View (cartoon, rainbow over the protein chains, first blue to last red):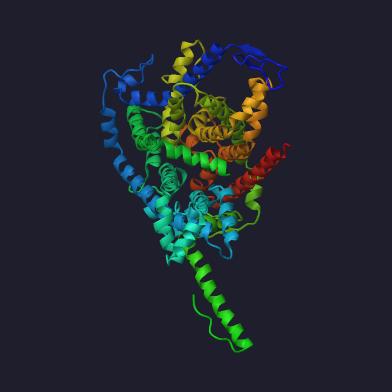
Length: 297
Length: 309
């Protein structure tokens, strides 16, 4: 291949890297090796915990390490469901997360529409205020929220867990940006025809916003589902405990890994399942949402 | 639209325009704020008010039972004399120094790797991103087991390759690195995805032009890839720093701040002071300091990143 000026000829089959000349084949080999290493490193913890959870208790603490459970057993799963109220924790997590997503999306869609499409006094101020909340680590709000809910006697309740997730600034910005990409003329046409603001939102924007809404819903769901610190602090009864906090109590109960490793592992695997299912079904939305964040910023 | 009635005097004009201005306000601003209300009410009550309140509490001595006593800056003074707090700051910094370079540089390297035309790259991508859906306590259990001193996978393979096993979570020097490795496994995917998107946005002609002029791969990276990613760095680096400064869940699950307090970070300090010792004012003061430090650090970083040419 000659350059435009014809003064140099460069063989593109050689790949220069820091003064080492690597042939194409070496390059490919290195890349594939790296890819395999990465894949293995990321997959192993999952595989290992699943394998371990399917082993009979006395076979878990073995040396050397065995990758095939023999005998294969579901006993750990039965025991963890017996010993710990995992079903209650799962239920609580579902209730809290679904409610949060539902309420949050309503609030966020309405608010995003206002910010995206309406001209009103104080718009910039509101926008800045909500933006400022990003700078705020949740740590400052933990203690006051705890005290507040405590005084109102609603600490250990679904209310305290759900309400904190409704004002989701992240999704608000996501949807505001998204709504702003719609051509204003469409809306204006609809409104001239007598459509109300709410109508425009409901019948025009929302149906066309499905991808953004799914992404927002996923974000909200997982933030709520995986939320640890606040539920840890707010709830101290199993009646309202959510899954992440429940799982953490295993370790306390086990007095630091005492006698039932298999049960703990089964519990951890159970905790991972809902997330992984959602992930494999909806991968594109996860990636899409994160990528948008980074770029839009 | 209403038909303007015939106007017979200046007063009438004035009255008319006040009325329609009022109507406009009613329709416009009130509608907007009505739309915003479902968001703003929880926001004001559960985000803003607690934030302000958090700062206010830091000037009081308050346990949950009992009345708050105003003590001004005393909490802040106590913090700077509390070796537990100072240790927590040191540990947090240690975590950040270990974690942030990995989270930024390794994620870029991974993104580049996963951007190459390689068979099986989508499987690798899926595997790298998968941990993001896991809850912190599950991650803690999984890696706690990997790090098990006697039967853990890590030590087993270390022995296989002839190295000495390490009591990862109970050895003072290795506990924090262990937490860092776990954190990277769990959270690097965020940065990887962002960088991947950024890499894919770089027009291939830029690389072509560079290759024609005889640029090496390294030069291409340095003069084409990196500059194109600079706006992303302005996001990725501060976010990684802030997130690292607030690490908590993994430590709570894996080491409980140990061994001998070597993984006792600022968030852990806040947690124990507030919810075990019930020293709300002190905990709030620590939280306020953390916030101020985060903001300051972010500003410094943004200046540094955007200041470079």
